[in-house]
Length: 369
Image 1 (cartoon, one colour):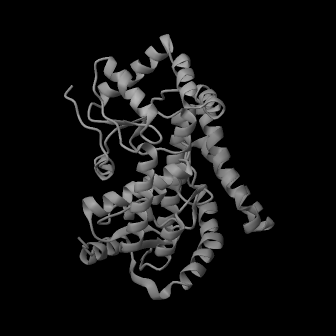
Image 2 (image 1 turned 45 degrees about the vertical axis):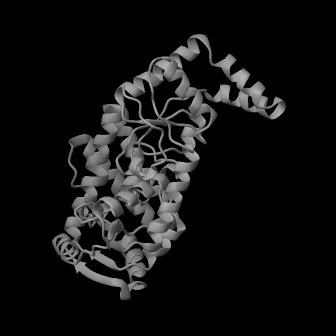
Image 3 (image 1 turned 90 degrees about the horizontal axis):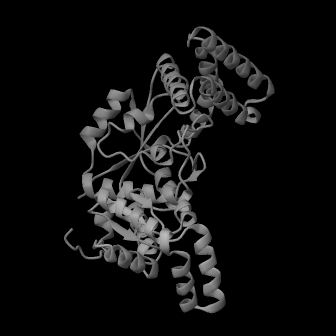
């Protein structure tokens, strides 16, 4: 493998999805890393903890000595083997630690001793994270945003992805943004979410260019919080209102939250446990908005949902879900959305069905580059 230089071209790393080997401890990686990063630690959590205590009590030299004692012999060989596997899969990648210092240099040297030159990211995680924070602040301040809004069940995410330059915030948060929005896989950490948003915004700006299209979101998408500056810009940006008839909205809700979610649970958990977990997912989502629904309306909806689930389990029929979906849209989500929209009338660019929205966006897309 030809030797490549270390890099501080952070923009290139993110725009081109360059694989990154994060040699920090697993606990550091879990708090937050980057979309193309994999964890291949120099020290595990316990080793890092012990070295940290030694550093505080006895200084750097003793901490380094302890680190070499803890990561030696078979343990060292296993770590190097893990790094070599990453390098074999990603010869174009880079490695990094927290600040691009001792851990990166040591990892790099051990890999080199094994016969491979592999470059590191100068400044490490801290520099990469600072680059993303500063870049996102600049893009939020200077970008042109169009917000796709619409009542629940209109299929906003499907239409968003057909627009000229979309950033799918719900996809980045791995959550659909409502009480029913959780997925079978977990959401990213808050730092991971912020990093994902920043990278997506950089790609939208540098690789596509022009106005960026976002779906109308509240401050929280599940447990992931939008950066406040982005939320403020979205709140003042022009709107595109997606409209669909009730029948189509019910069909979209059923497809996304009943049929697709059941398949996801069955794929993950098997037939019996998958069905039980899917059933719990729907009933628990309704339970979470019980207070806002009020006792009587909640009980009516829960009875309808239970009947639909019982019918689906017994016969496979899905038509029983129509009643609770339509009632929930009519009596809960629509009044809430209509009130919110009444506060935004002056910002509406266009309203209509999916084709109307797509045509408008294609014909009025602003190229800023």
